[in-house]
Amino acid sequence: MPALSTNNTIQNHLLAALPAVECQEILAQMELVQLQLGTMLYEPNEQMRYAYFPTTAIISLHYVTESGASVETAGVGNEGMVGVSLFMGGNTTPSSAMVQTAGQAYRFERHQLQTEFKREGLFRQLLLRYSQALLTQVSQTAACNRHHSIEQQLSRWLLATLDRVPSGELIMTQELVANMLGVRRESVTTAAGALQQVGCINYRRGHISILNRKVLEGRVCECYLVVKREVTRLMGSAT
Image (cartoon, rainbow, N blue to C red):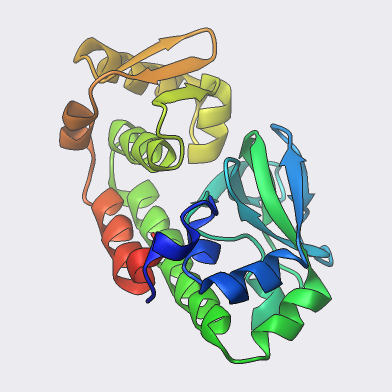
């Protein structure tokens, strides 16, 4: 993978891994858009029109049951993109995509994305490698939700979000976090209280501040590092 040095002003790491000329050619076909908190980018089984390459936004991929319950299957920030179905041949997916953290993203029309993917260049390689990294995140999240405590799940989710929002300040209600994890709000309240008690975080009025990342890393299960290492292995200097 090429170094980031040529394109380090591009905030999306996947795009920044491209050579400067190729990156600019692709960016010229994209539109930089502002994504608002809670916006649905696509619904289950809906024809997807765009792919999104976040820069400062974070997008949550959700599965919603027939009863209306939901759980996050993966999160996507500046390390990747949303819309792998568009170049994998599906065009639709049974999950939905919602903006978890407001910010910006590059929006790529599906036909233009598919045309670039068919060129079989570095961009295609990066998209395929990221797809494998995303699959790892989905499978690891499923294992984590089944076998690890809510405190560990919350710690994993906070660290993954913090990697995408390095300020350490998250605007997030406990109700929204509970929807992400697919658990009761009261369970998140208890887990967040435990993390606050040991000095990991501070929570007040929809704001979560990470006070001590090292301590938080000591509370998390192995799932966080499994995903992080796999992204690094697959994407190389693109992350």
